[in-house]
Amino acid sequence: MGRTGRLSRVNNIADLRMLARRRLPRPIFDYIDGGADDEVSLARNSSAFADYEIVPDVLTDVSRIETGATLFGEAVDWPLMLAPTGLTRMFHDGAELAVARAAARHGLLYSLSTLGTTRLEDLAAAFGGPKVFQIYIFKDRGLTAEFVARCKAAGFHGLALTVDTPVAGNRERDRVNGLSLPPRLTLKSFLSFAAHPGWSLPALRGSKFDFANVSHKVDALAGGPMSLFDYIGGQFDRSLTWKDVEWLAAEWGGPLAIKGLMTPEDARRAIASGASGVMVSNHGGRQLDGAPAPVDQVAAVRDALGDGPDVICDGGIRRGSDVVKALALGATACSVGRPYLYGLAAGGEAGVDRALTLLREEFERTLALAGVNDIARLERRHVRPLLSRPAPWA
Image (tube, rainbow, N blue to C red; front, side, top):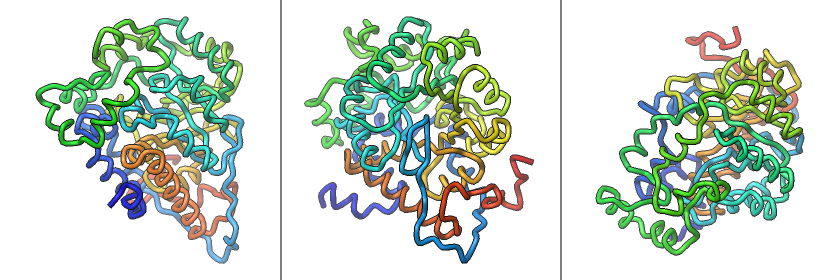
């Protein structure tokens, strides 16, 4: 059965994950799938959604459901954004452009990672929809300022500043696999790469792997494979404070979300420092293991910020019903990374399209069954914690 046929038999994101696992060499799949330390937060990000019940209304006309939203000041067809993910070309040669084309068909916002494998100018030229650039404030402030200027020139609509990386998380799967950029064959990984020619042969023939937006600053990339930990750890700055956020907000002058905060106090500081929104996130369970699941923090953050700023729940989404729960708790939108990467690895652009189609169908079906015909009418009363759990907003 061809790839198109396999995708037609996919019923959910878990099925796409299974296809991705079959297609990718173990070190590459583990880079998508893994988290930090014991991966407790990684697992909780998704399982936490099961701790909330949806309380439906009945006898509501749901023949038409309004799903449009505004995110980073831009209109989207429904409240989902595609999260920034690094090294996307490792999963499929279509890379970020394949993901962006699928996002455009679904009317969604796409976010490009600083550590992506497509130049931001190339992404902007190919994708006319709402787009955000995920940025770090590096030790080299000149590089950060350069990114801001390039994003302005390329027409990006917003920035998402990641702030949960004073040091690199301890991603043990990647350490065990010796993951490097470009992927390096070792005795341990050779058999896995050789057993997956559907990935390995296109990877050998395709575009080179590099951090396309920063490679001009990284001399080591020209000299051979380098450890991801060496590069990323070398650029993170432990001295960052809210003053740096104020500097970036003034330098950018447009919509800015702070990605990686978890508390109401930090959310208030973010807005006071010039941000227009926050992304409640623990970096997909890849940084601080033991951090709370983002969905459990959404209600408290929304209560702290009031109705104005964007509150984006980033992490753990595997079903469209998860998006409904997060919105009812107070999120403006949700952000997904692994679901579309599983699709990309399983079937390229068509796989991403399948992932987004499944999530959208589940989202609208859940709204209909919950008796909600407009996402603006979702309220906290539409969800409740399981009786065994206290309400996180209590």
